[in-house]
Image (cartoon, rainbow, N blue to C red; front, top):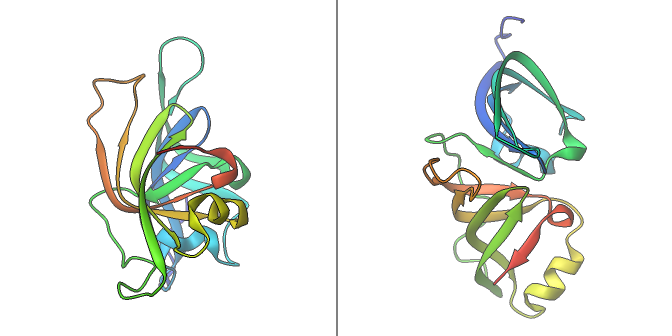
Length: 170
C-alpha cells in the first residue's frame, strides 16, 4: 500500500454488488465529494479499496473475507455510500421547485434499501426512472438484509444507486 500524498484523503465507503458488500477505504484527491464521486468524470473504472472487508452472498452461508487491498469493477457496483457515521452535504437544494419525493424500497442484490427518491413532479417517478441513465440518489435510507437478520439496519443520509441494476417497489 502507498502513503497518502498531501493532496489526497482516505474515505471509508460501502460498495454493493449483486452478490457482495465491500467496506473499505478509497483514496481520492482532497477536493472530491466522495458521496457523488460516481457521477463525476473522475469516477474510477475500479474501486481500489484498502483495509477491506467483504461479505459474499452466493448460494449457502455468507462468506466473510478481509483484504489489505481489493479491486471492485465499477461496472459491477449497484449501490454506494459513505460508511457511517461519515456524511457530506446532500446533492440537492432544499427549496428546489417542481420536485416530488416518494418513499421506495430498492432491491440491491440481497439487500433492501428503503428511502426517499426525488424526481420531477411533472413527469412522475416512472418516467423519471426511464430517463435516468447514470446514478440516482436515495435519501434517509435504511439498509437491511433479509439473509442476515442478525445484521443491524444501516442508516445513511444519502447513497447512490445504479437504477439499471435495481428493482424498485412502492
